[in-house]
Image (cartoon, rainbow, N blue to C red; front, side, top):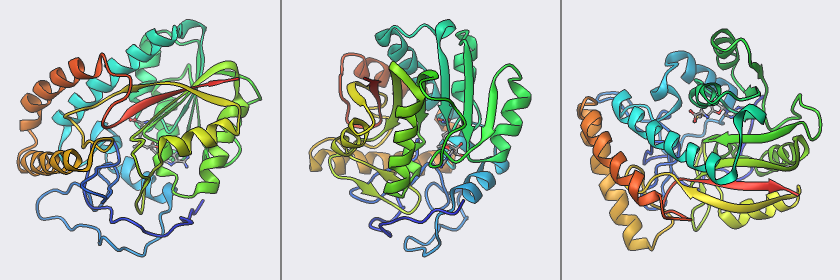
Length: 313
Ligand SMILES: C[S@@+](CC[C@H](N)C(=O)[O-])C[C@H]1O[C@@H](n2cnc3c(N)ncnc32)[C@H](O)[C@@H]1O
Protein backbone atom coordinates (compact mmCIF):
# COMPACT_ATOMS: atom_id res chain seq x y z
CA UNK A 1 0.00 0.00 0.00
CA UNK A 2 2.57 2.49 -1.03
CA UNK A 3 1.19 5.86 -1.89
CA UNK A 4 2.94 8.57 -3.72
CA UNK A 5 1.91 12.15 -3.84
CA UNK A 6 0.95 13.38 -7.24
CA UNK A 7 2.30 16.74 -6.25
CA UNK A 8 5.65 16.27 -4.75
CA UNK A 9 6.60 18.52 -1.93
CA UNK A 10 5.31 22.02 -2.07
CA UNK A 11 5.73 22.75 1.59
CA UNK A 12 8.20 21.70 4.16
CA UNK A 13 6.64 19.66 6.94
CA UNK A 14 8.16 21.79 9.54
CA UNK A 15 5.80 23.52 11.87
CA UNK A 16 3.79 21.25 14.02
CA UNK A 17 0.25 21.20 15.18
CA UNK A 18 -1.86 19.11 17.42
CA UNK A 19 -4.03 17.36 14.94
CA UNK A 20 -1.79 16.81 12.09
CA UNK A 21 -1.29 20.09 10.33
CA UNK A 22 0.70 22.66 12.22
CA UNK A 23 0.99 25.75 10.23
CA UNK A 24 3.44 28.58 10.41
CA UNK A 25 3.16 30.72 7.40
CA UNK A 26 2.84 28.20 4.62
CA UNK A 27 4.87 25.43 6.13
CA UNK A 28 3.07 22.32 7.07
CA UNK A 29 3.56 19.50 9.47
CA UNK A 30 1.55 16.52 10.33
CA UNK A 31 0.47 15.60 13.77
CA UNK A 32 3.60 14.99 15.67
CA UNK A 33 5.09 13.02 12.86
CA UNK A 34 8.83 12.82 12.56
CA UNK A 35 10.07 16.25 11.76
CA UNK A 36 7.40 18.08 13.63
CA UNK A 37 7.40 18.25 17.39
CA UNK A 38 10.54 16.69 18.64
CA UNK A 39 11.86 15.69 21.95
CA UNK A 40 14.90 17.78 22.68
CA UNK A 41 17.92 16.20 21.14
CA UNK A 42 16.09 14.12 18.58
CA UNK A 43 16.59 14.66 14.89
CA UNK A 44 14.21 16.58 12.70
CA UNK A 45 13.21 14.87 9.49
CA UNK A 46 14.87 16.75 6.66
CA UNK A 47 12.37 19.28 5.36
CA UNK A 48 13.10 18.23 1.81
CA UNK A 49 13.11 14.50 2.54
CA UNK A 50 12.72 12.66 -0.75
CA UNK A 51 11.28 9.67 1.06
CA UNK A 52 7.93 8.57 -0.25
CA UNK A 53 5.13 8.66 2.26
CA UNK A 54 3.96 5.11 2.79
CA UNK A 55 0.99 5.55 5.13
CA UNK A 56 0.85 1.95 6.26
CA UNK A 57 4.50 1.83 7.30
CA UNK A 58 4.37 5.30 8.76
CA UNK A 59 1.28 4.75 10.91
CA UNK A 60 2.10 1.20 11.88
CA UNK A 61 5.44 2.38 13.30
CA UNK A 62 3.93 5.39 14.93
CA UNK A 63 1.01 3.66 16.61
CA UNK A 64 3.07 0.63 17.65
CA UNK A 65 5.54 3.03 19.22
CA UNK A 66 2.88 4.79 21.24
CA UNK A 67 -0.68 3.53 21.35
CA UNK A 68 -2.05 6.51 23.23
CA UNK A 69 -3.35 10.01 22.62
CA UNK A 70 0.08 11.41 21.92
CA UNK A 71 0.68 8.63 19.36
CA UNK A 72 -2.51 9.45 17.47
CA UNK A 73 -2.36 13.13 18.28
CA UNK A 74 0.57 15.46 18.47
CA UNK A 75 3.75 13.78 19.54
CA UNK A 76 6.41 15.71 21.40
CA UNK A 77 4.26 18.15 23.32
CA UNK A 78 3.33 15.35 25.69
CA UNK A 79 0.28 13.62 27.02
CA UNK A 80 -1.22 16.37 29.21
CA UNK A 81 -1.64 18.89 26.40
CA UNK A 82 -2.87 16.17 24.05
CA UNK A 83 -5.47 15.23 26.64
CA UNK A 84 -6.65 18.82 26.72
CA UNK A 85 -6.86 18.88 22.93
CA UNK A 86 -8.89 15.70 22.92
CA UNK A 87 -11.22 17.02 25.64
CA UNK A 88 -11.97 19.99 23.41
CA UNK A 89 -12.56 17.61 20.48
CA UNK A 90 -15.04 15.69 22.60
CA UNK A 91 -16.95 18.86 23.41
CA UNK A 92 -17.25 19.66 19.73
CA UNK A 93 -18.15 16.05 18.91
CA UNK A 94 -21.11 16.31 21.28
CA UNK A 95 -22.10 19.67 19.85
CA UNK A 96 -22.18 18.17 16.38
CA UNK A 97 -24.27 15.19 17.50
CA UNK A 98 -26.75 17.56 19.13
CA UNK A 99 -26.85 19.90 16.17
CA UNK A 100 -27.54 17.06 13.76
CA UNK A 101 -29.84 15.25 16.17
CA UNK A 102 -27.76 12.12 15.76
CA UNK A 103 -29.09 9.46 18.09
CA UNK A 104 -26.18 7.03 18.72
CA UNK A 105 -28.38 4.04 19.67
CA UNK A 106 -30.00 4.36 16.24
CA UNK A 107 -26.78 4.99 14.33
CA UNK A 108 -24.63 2.66 12.28
CA UNK A 109 -21.22 4.32 12.21
CA UNK A 110 -18.22 3.76 9.97
CA UNK A 111 -15.17 5.36 11.54
CA UNK A 112 -12.23 6.00 9.23
CA UNK A 113 -8.78 5.91 10.80
CA UNK A 114 -9.85 5.21 14.39
CA UNK A 115 -6.19 5.12 15.47
CA UNK A 116 -5.98 4.51 19.19
CA UNK A 117 -9.75 4.59 19.57
CA UNK A 118 -10.53 7.93 21.17
CA UNK A 119 -13.75 8.37 19.20
CA UNK A 120 -14.56 4.66 19.43
CA UNK A 121 -14.76 5.11 23.19
CA UNK A 122 -16.98 8.18 22.78
CA UNK A 123 -19.38 6.26 20.54
CA UNK A 124 -19.40 3.32 22.92
CA UNK A 125 -20.26 5.49 25.92
CA UNK A 126 -23.07 7.03 23.94
CA UNK A 127 -24.50 3.59 23.14
CA UNK A 128 -23.94 3.53 19.38
CA UNK A 129 -25.91 0.84 17.53
CA UNK A 130 -22.92 -0.45 15.56
CA UNK A 131 -19.44 0.67 14.62
CA UNK A 132 -17.04 -0.44 11.93
CA UNK A 133 -13.53 1.00 12.19
CA UNK A 134 -11.30 1.00 9.11
CA UNK A 135 -7.65 1.75 9.73
CA UNK A 136 -4.64 1.20 7.53
CA UNK A 137 -2.66 -0.31 10.41
CA UNK A 138 -2.78 -3.84 11.75
CA UNK A 139 -2.05 -2.54 15.23
CA UNK A 140 -5.22 -0.42 15.38
CA UNK A 141 -7.51 -3.20 14.27
CA UNK A 142 -5.83 -5.77 16.56
CA UNK A 143 -5.89 -3.62 19.67
CA UNK A 144 -9.29 -2.08 19.08
CA UNK A 145 -10.82 -5.51 18.38
CA UNK A 146 -9.44 -6.70 21.72
CA UNK A 147 -10.67 -3.61 23.56
CA UNK A 148 -14.09 -3.35 21.87
CA UNK A 149 -15.24 -6.86 20.97
CA UNK A 150 -18.78 -5.71 20.19
CA UNK A 151 -17.53 -3.49 17.35
CA UNK A 152 -15.82 -4.48 14.10
CA UNK A 153 -12.38 -3.30 12.99
CA UNK A 154 -10.56 -4.08 9.79
CA UNK A 155 -7.20 -3.20 8.39
CA UNK A 156 -8.24 -1.30 5.30
CA UNK A 157 -6.73 1.47 3.24
CA UNK A 158 -9.68 3.82 2.88
CA UNK A 159 -8.37 4.97 -0.49
CA UNK A 160 -9.32 1.55 -1.79
CA UNK A 161 -12.82 -0.02 -1.84
CA UNK A 162 -14.34 -0.39 1.64
CA UNK A 163 -15.83 -3.69 2.85
CA UNK A 164 -19.25 -2.10 3.43
CA UNK A 165 -22.45 -2.46 1.42
CA UNK A 166 -24.03 0.51 -0.35
CA UNK A 167 -26.18 2.82 1.81
CA UNK A 168 -25.39 0.84 4.96
CA UNK A 169 -24.18 3.64 7.26
CA UNK A 170 -25.95 6.52 8.98
CA UNK A 171 -22.71 8.27 9.90
CA UNK A 172 -19.20 8.11 8.44
CA UNK A 173 -16.47 9.92 10.37
CA UNK A 174 -12.98 10.95 9.30
CA UNK A 175 -11.39 12.72 12.24
CA UNK A 176 -7.90 13.92 11.36
CA UNK A 177 -7.58 11.32 8.65
CA UNK A 178 -8.35 12.67 5.17
CA UNK A 179 -5.48 15.15 5.29
CA UNK A 180 -3.17 12.18 5.47
CA UNK A 181 -4.20 11.19 1.95
CA UNK A 182 -1.69 13.10 -0.10
CA UNK A 183 -2.72 11.76 -3.50
CA UNK A 184 -5.75 13.57 -4.97
CA UNK A 185 -6.99 10.55 -6.91
CA UNK A 186 -6.93 8.44 -3.77
CA UNK A 187 -8.60 11.25 -1.84
CA UNK A 188 -11.42 11.27 -4.41
CA UNK A 189 -11.77 7.49 -4.07
CA UNK A 190 -12.18 7.79 -0.29
CA UNK A 191 -14.83 10.50 -0.70
CA UNK A 192 -16.55 8.33 -3.32
CA UNK A 193 -16.64 5.40 -0.91
CA UNK A 194 -18.17 7.61 1.79
CA UNK A 195 -20.85 8.67 -0.69
CA UNK A 196 -21.53 5.06 -1.65
CA UNK A 197 -21.68 3.68 1.89
CA UNK A 198 -23.83 6.44 3.41
CA UNK A 199 -27.59 6.07 3.18
CA UNK A 200 -29.54 9.03 1.77
CA UNK A 201 -29.76 11.57 4.58
CA UNK A 202 -26.70 10.08 6.32
CA UNK A 203 -23.83 12.35 7.35
CA UNK A 204 -20.10 12.50 6.81
CA UNK A 205 -18.07 14.27 9.52
CA UNK A 206 -14.57 15.36 8.55
CA UNK A 207 -12.06 17.27 10.65
CA UNK A 208 -9.46 19.30 8.81
CA UNK A 209 -8.18 22.87 8.57
CA UNK A 210 -9.95 23.90 5.34
CA UNK A 211 -7.37 26.65 4.80
CA UNK A 212 -7.72 29.55 2.37
CA UNK A 213 -5.06 27.98 0.15
CA UNK A 214 -4.36 24.27 0.11
CA UNK A 215 -1.45 23.28 2.31
CA UNK A 216 0.57 20.45 0.86
CA UNK A 217 3.22 18.65 2.83
CA UNK A 218 5.02 15.39 2.67
CA UNK A 219 2.62 13.45 4.87
CA UNK A 220 -0.28 15.76 4.87
CA UNK A 221 -2.48 17.80 2.54
CA UNK A 222 -5.13 20.15 3.90
CA UNK A 223 -7.48 20.96 1.06
CA UNK A 224 -9.58 24.09 0.81
CA UNK A 225 -13.27 24.13 1.52
CA UNK A 226 -13.93 24.67 -2.19
CA UNK A 227 -11.89 21.57 -3.05
CA UNK A 228 -13.79 19.55 -0.46
CA UNK A 229 -17.15 20.85 -1.66
CA UNK A 230 -16.38 19.94 -5.26
CA UNK A 231 -15.16 16.43 -4.37
CA UNK A 232 -18.10 15.81 -2.07
CA UNK A 233 -20.69 17.10 -4.56
CA UNK A 234 -19.45 14.65 -7.19
CA UNK A 235 -20.54 11.86 -4.85
CA UNK A 236 -23.90 13.24 -3.74
CA UNK A 237 -22.64 14.88 -0.56
CA UNK A 238 -23.57 18.47 0.28
CA UNK A 239 -21.78 20.50 2.94
CA UNK A 240 -24.43 21.63 5.40
CA UNK A 241 -22.35 23.25 8.13
CA UNK A 242 -19.05 23.39 10.00
CA UNK A 243 -18.19 23.37 13.67
CA UNK A 244 -14.94 25.00 14.82
CA UNK A 245 -12.78 22.89 17.11
CA UNK A 246 -9.83 25.12 18.10
CA UNK A 247 -9.03 28.82 18.25
CA UNK A 248 -6.02 29.24 20.56
CA UNK A 249 -4.92 25.61 20.89
CA UNK A 250 -3.88 25.20 17.29
CA UNK A 251 -2.44 27.51 14.61
CA UNK A 252 -5.01 29.68 12.87
CA UNK A 253 -5.00 29.48 9.07
CA UNK A 254 -8.38 30.76 7.96
CA UNK A 255 -7.56 34.35 8.94
CA UNK A 256 -5.79 37.32 7.33
CA UNK A 257 -2.07 36.74 6.78
CA UNK A 258 -0.94 39.00 9.63
CA UNK A 259 -3.08 37.13 12.12
CA UNK A 260 -1.94 33.79 10.76
CA UNK A 261 1.66 34.87 11.27
CA UNK A 262 0.90 35.97 14.82
CA UNK A 263 -0.84 32.71 15.55
CA UNK A 264 2.10 30.82 14.04
CA UNK A 265 4.49 32.63 16.40
CA UNK A 266 2.24 31.91 19.34
CA UNK A 267 2.10 28.22 18.46
CA UNK A 268 5.81 28.09 17.87
CA UNK A 269 6.49 29.48 21.32
CA UNK A 270 3.91 27.20 22.93
CA UNK A 271 5.35 24.15 21.23
CA UNK A 272 8.87 24.87 22.45
CA UNK A 273 7.61 25.63 25.93
CA UNK A 274 5.67 22.37 26.12
CA UNK A 275 8.45 20.26 24.65
CA UNK A 276 10.83 21.65 27.27
CA UNK A 277 8.51 20.32 29.98
CA UNK A 278 5.38 18.44 28.83
CA UNK A 279 3.95 18.58 32.37
CA UNK A 280 3.21 22.25 31.69
CA UNK A 281 0.55 21.03 29.28
CA UNK A 282 -1.81 20.18 32.11
CA UNK A 283 -2.35 23.74 33.35
CA UNK A 284 -1.91 25.43 29.98
CA UNK A 285 -4.21 22.87 28.37
CA UNK A 286 -6.91 23.62 30.93
CA UNK A 287 -6.62 27.38 30.41
CA UNK A 288 -6.63 27.27 26.61
CA UNK A 289 -9.36 24.64 26.44
CA UNK A 290 -11.64 26.77 28.58
CA UNK A 291 -11.04 29.71 26.20
CA UNK A 292 -11.61 27.59 23.10
CA UNK A 293 -14.70 26.01 24.54
CA UNK A 294 -16.31 29.45 24.83
CA UNK A 295 -14.95 30.96 21.61
CA UNK A 296 -15.96 28.03 19.40
CA UNK A 297 -19.52 27.84 20.69
CA UNK A 298 -21.10 30.72 18.73
CA UNK A 299 -18.93 30.34 15.62
CA UNK A 300 -20.16 28.66 12.48
CA UNK A 301 -16.71 28.70 10.88
CA UNK A 302 -13.42 28.92 12.70
CA UNK A 303 -9.82 30.03 12.18
CA UNK A 304 -8.32 26.58 12.63
CA UNK A 305 -9.47 22.95 12.72
CA UNK A 306 -13.17 22.46 12.05
CA UNK A 307 -15.55 19.55 11.73
CA UNK A 308 -17.20 19.72 8.34
CA UNK A 309 -20.65 18.17 8.08
CA UNK A 310 -21.84 16.85 4.72
CA UNK A 311 -25.16 15.15 4.08
CA UNK A 312 -25.86 12.48 1.48
CA UNK A 313 -28.59 13.50 -0.96
C1 LIG B 1 -3.90 11.46 13.10
S1 LIG B 1 -4.42 9.80 13.37
C2 LIG B 1 -6.09 10.09 13.91
C3 LIG B 1 -6.65 8.97 14.72
C4 LIG B 1 -8.05 9.21 15.29
N1 LIG B 1 -9.01 9.46 14.26
C5 LIG B 1 -8.00 10.38 16.24
O1 LIG B 1 -8.48 11.45 15.89
O2 LIG B 1 -7.47 10.19 17.35
C6 LIG B 1 -4.67 9.21 11.69
C7 LIG B 1 -5.21 7.79 11.62
O3 LIG B 1 -5.58 7.53 10.25
C8 LIG B 1 -5.06 6.27 9.86
N2 LIG B 1 -4.84 6.33 8.40
C9 LIG B 1 -3.98 7.14 7.73
N3 LIG B 1 -4.10 6.94 6.41
C10 LIG B 1 -5.05 5.97 6.23
C11 LIG B 1 -5.60 5.33 5.10
N4 LIG B 1 -5.22 5.62 3.86
N5 LIG B 1 -6.55 4.37 5.29
C12 LIG B 1 -6.96 4.06 6.56
N6 LIG B 1 -6.46 4.65 7.67
C13 LIG B 1 -5.53 5.60 7.52
C14 LIG B 1 -3.79 6.11 10.67
O4 LIG B 1 -3.41 4.76 10.82
C15 LIG B 1 -4.21 6.73 12.00
O5 LIG B 1 -4.85 5.78 12.82
